[in-house]
Length: 133
Image 1 (spheres, rainbow, N blue to C red):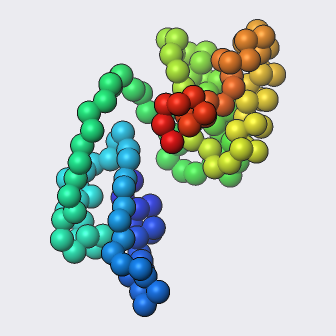
Image 2: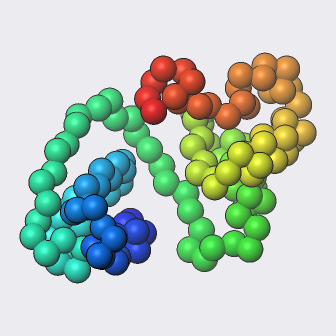
Image 3: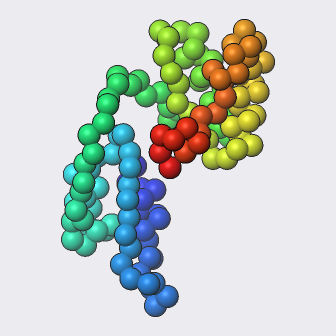
């Protein structure tokens, strides 16, 4: 949300700054008007460019409190979604390659029949697939 962007923008103008901050924010769930009108972030409303893309129905699952072990929590949530909801993709955001590898290994162990098809549980790297950078 806008809280994380606010933290990233705070204090960007300084004597060492090469000029105004140029920022691109991409999000499927961003409330554009609320963020654009936030005078603490932007003294004057910044321009907004909206790029239309394919949209698919999405269900958002999250925990109200940050768990102590977020990788384990992601594993449990993905397992719950996989076993209880109709077939579809699951998108999980993690902070680094080690966490991604660990979660993929846990999923391979839990669902060994899917492990025979490595592409189903391999981390997708969009830049390598030519789908973005």
